[in-house]
Image (cartoon, rainbow, N blue to C red):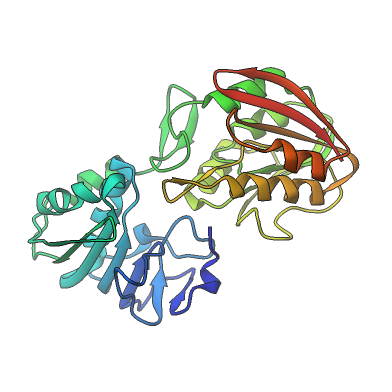
Length: 319
């Protein structure tokens, strides 16, 4: 995912005081104009502010690239409307096959009068915050962090596999031996794999990295072990992990903004290799169809297929 620092006219920030214009995500410039200096609020752009931290009426305008998940999208729209001053402008857009066709109806449900346009396979909705929007708090509460009883962990809608253990992670957990030394977890999510890693008393330190602030915050709640450090960062960026690690584990993402992007996992494989000491091990779980074998062979001295089940495969690679 692109670093926000490389996006002209959009600035990250840790505080939202005085923000008049805001943007959520990286909307295509040909579809929506983002004011210069707009404060970024996407949870998947490290360094961004948090939309939920804004007080009511803080913003004059917001451009929001709506996420594909229904609960997450409705919560983001509701947070945006709550943050806008009455009469403030909201432009919300999304690909038509990833929630775009629902935007107008969802905004109308909050009491908005919507103007809708279609362009380049997107739906673009423009509206102004009504004086008394309806249903905002319910939508915000539905998308908020919570303890998920089925998995016994904190999570939040919008995070990868937010309310279940995905089959790739389950495959890794079933075959992962006790590890030792200093390690890393690339694309850590809410910390499911990390909890298994930290069950080994021979692990001395574990650095977890994820690009999603919500996953990072959940992982910090789920992992109270002092050996764990959870970092909000783009794992593809050099320096995201310490050097000369003894092991790295990963169930890497392969989607970006709802579309498959195989380069994500391939880049993380190279980053894992760069972070390992000679002889260090890399445990990778991935969907069977993803073409990671060539990158593994290029980056590692030894690559061993460990298991395959339910459409996933597991490798151990040695640096």
